Length: 368
Image (tube, rainbow, N blue to C red):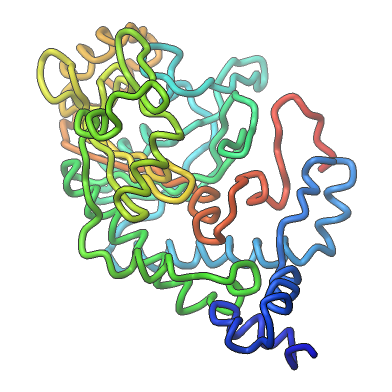
C-alpha cells in the first residue's frame, strides 16, 4: 500500500511525512524520490546536456533567483545602494603575503597584466566614499585554488561596505541572513521541500535574538588547543574545518568567531592595538563552516601603511587605496557572504559543487 498523491505530499508535507505513511519502509521509499543532486559536474562533457532535464538544476536556479530578489529587497528597505563594479582589479584583496588564504587569478587583457577580483571590497570602500552611503553588490569572485566539496574556483559573492565599526556590520549581517531565511520560508517553501525534508533550520535562524560570539582565543580554549582542530603556522594560528564544525555544534548551528591572530587575515583588517596581535574581524560560522567573513577597515593612510609593512605586502599596487584613505578618511566595515555556501546551508546539502548550474574548475577546458 502506498501514500496517495505522492508528488503533492512531497511538496506539501515532507517535514511531517511519516504521519502520512503506513510503515518506515514506505517513508524511506518516498524520501528516495526527493530531488537530489546528480553529481553530473564530475563529467563536464555530459553535464551541460544532463542539466537541461535534471530537476535539481531547475530547483537550484529558482533558489538562486530568489536569493537575488531577497537581497535587492533587503537593501532597498534599508536604503543602501547597489554598485556596478568591474571584475578586474589591479589591487587584489588577497595578496600573496602573510594572512592570504587564496591564490589570485592573473590574466592578460590587451597585453596588460591584471587580476580577476577575488573580492570587490576595495572598490566598495571607494564607492562608500563617493556615495557617502552603504554600498553592496552581487557578482562572481575568482580564486586560484582547485575546487573541492567546500571551495569553488568561481563563486558568487554578496558583499557590502558601510560606514561604521565591526559591531555595526555584524548587526547588518544578522539582519540580512535572517531576512534571507524568512524570504525563503515565505516565498520558496514548496520548492525547498522538494529537495530536503527538514526546513527547521530556517526557523532556528529567524528566531535567534542574537547570534552568539566567541573570540579566537576563547575558541582555542574550548577546543582544548587540540591539533585536530587548531593549526599552528608558527607566527599565527587558524581553526580548521573540523574545528569550525565543533563550534557550530556547540553553539546550536550559528556562531560568530572573532578577533583572529592578525597575521592569519589579510592586511586590510584593522588591528586591535599597535602590536598587531589580533584583528578586528568576525566570521559567521553556519552550515559547512565560514559562510560570512567580515571586518573593520583601517581609518587612515598611516594605519594602512603600517599594516602593509607588518604583513610584508608591497605598497606598489595599493598606492591608490592609500591615497583614497588620505583624501577621504572614513571608518568603514564590510562583509562578504558566499552565495553558494548559503545555498548549501539552505538546502541541507554537503558538496558546494552541486550549487552551480554551470561549473567552473581551474585547469579544465570549458564546454560552455
